[in-house]
Image 1 (cartoon, rainbow, N blue to C red):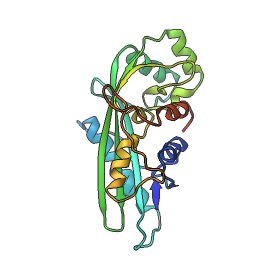
Image 2 (image 1 turned 60 degrees about the vertical axis):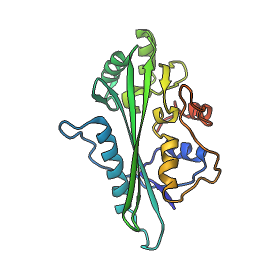
Image 3 (image 1 turned 180 degrees about the vertical axis):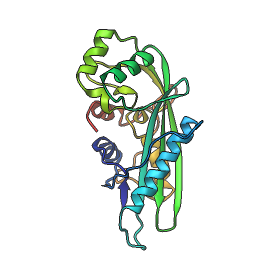
Image 4 (image 1 turned 180 degrees about the horizontal axis):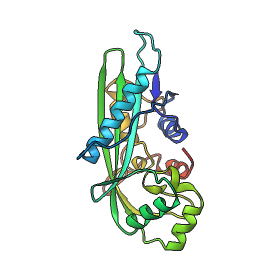
Length: 223
């Protein structure tokens, strides 16, 4: 039994694309940064905390081999973590600061098995370079309302905006769930997809992500 510690329809669809079916058990936790916390340590800590919190909130028989999968993604530039913008003004500030520059997208992935307390976690990092979109384009995108539920205030391939000019690393990571890292973590528990076929990050000199085109269609859809 695979249980996703999130209510995100996009993450469920990404898992389905890779061949996993799952239930949802969202976990509400305090996502505040700790003083001086490194962004990578931050996303790993949140992912692990979410996985444990989701397990604590679900009544699972002791002999049930249930796995709780959690993920947390952060957009980071110059050491600063960009969360979801609170309003249009915050979205404008984020998009202005990211425009024409390269930032990192870090995702922490954690899988927890309550049966024996085993926990594994990994982090995936993708470098994302934004194009020099105009202020008019930026305002039109903000007016659509899409930035308000996106870390960093953007979706990688939103129709009509397309803010990203280049990525180095895992494409799926930028949409919130690095399937390659998920596959590796779940394999440690012998949890294989229904349609095994291999997943790899998309980047220079690497095999193209086999579900990138389908992920691209999901990237602009709401959580």
